[in-house]
Length: 469
Ligand code: UGA
Image (cartoon, rainbow, N blue to C red; front, side, top):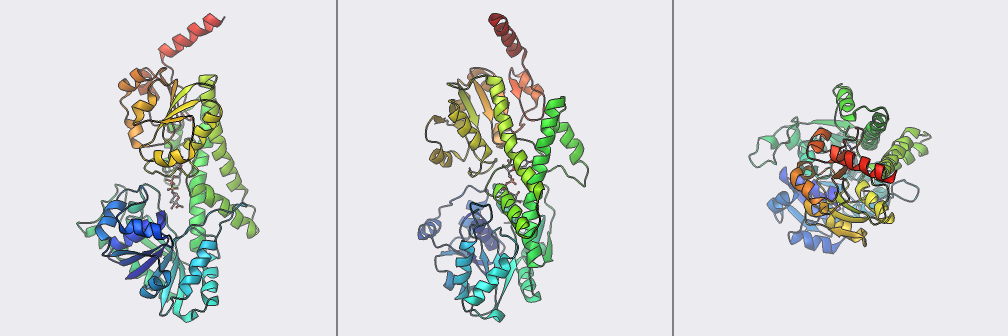
């Protein structure tokens, strides 16, 4: 099928590249000419596994880049809107980009097309898109609007697209439903999974995926409610972790015990320094605004947000309780991205913590495998950027683990021990077994688990206490 994808951001790029891999002809549209030129020249603007391979495979063949939205609309049977919906001051989504795209699409509707909203948007947006396209002159019989929310996680977006748990399609006509079924046919029929060239299957993937057809309003709500539920799971386990710390229980054991109940599930139950990123914080605020507008006061969401912020402050208090004073201390920091596997620092709890520590007068030596370039634009002074985790740890009064990168869970602990000034690790992501850290001579503090102190540190602390007395 011939598809236009409007918006070459994170969602648009992944969607376009994956549809090309399913055999469709894709034109990726963006009004930023510079971006288009860069993409044509082979640049890949975001750090996303398998995306460079897919773009290289299809660039100039099944995937083309253009700044001309009307021409792209005319050429396409399906037009995806994947532009940004940033939050406004009051927390609801700013839909002005979606509106201006809908306006332009209107001029290209010359034969039947399905216009699909892919951006995360509040309920009623698809109705508005339809109204705007008609208002700008398109024949109502020549198009339908569908809602096809994405459930992609940054870092695993390509495999999330190609091996989804489900595909949700919200439509108002059987004709649009049929177009969407055809579009995803290569996945739902299992055809894609039999190809030698297919992107490798993640371990837990169940194929073929189910395609769930709903009304457009239900599809819009499914997206917001899914993200809100996942964020709630994280805040829930973070709250439980705080209780574990108070009573001396172990949150890993508790989370395992809860998560094995198949009604609850063990995923998204890792405690830490809170969720971040460009989706959860924004979508929770937007969903709260949507609820309010519909007359429902969704206070549960406010609590989810409050627990999330408190989690970061709690970790900072923990660092303070270990280091006593901050001014002049040298801290090694592992991780700046909002989670592992991405260079995205938007609403990153790691970055927010680093900023707080800088305000307190700490000196930071940070390392992140992908996010340093972006972080450099935000962190101007007081921060050194290291070439690897070991350099970041060198001479540190304490080492902080703030992002769950796989490589941070596999450090050479013997080597690390020889590099730090004091063998103190504060792990905001629970990447290590406390007993192993102690065996390697570290005092280790994590989330929702008792601190594991080395005898050496304990002895030194006692000696210091005696000295003071
Ligand atoms: C999230 C959703 O998981 C996707 O399904 C959705 O499509 C996407 O938002 C979106 O709306 O576009 P993403 O923001 O990429 O995806 O990242 P997640 O993997 O969900 O992680 C979000 C945050 O939660 C990260 O800061 C991560 O560190 C944190 N997290 C995640 C935890 O603290 N604990 C967990 O158990 C899981």
